[in-house]
Image (cartoon, rainbow, N blue to C red; front, top):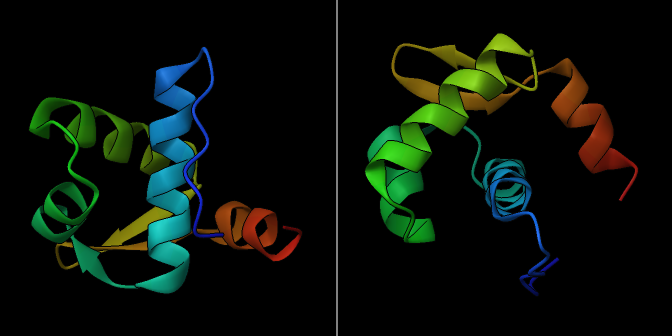
Length: 77
């Protein structure tokens, strides 16, 4: 999915962008995600932490990967 969809829920839009990015770039660091997507640092940090807490992502040695729920969701797209 190359097109960026913008809805009335910006946090969800950013979340989908992060998950799509990690589907294509597994093992990205915080800096890679934040810079490549052009997101504010504070939003990126908050969203990544929440996504890890909800098991949509997992973090290993400073790198982020889709978690089991995130992988299943991306596969259905």
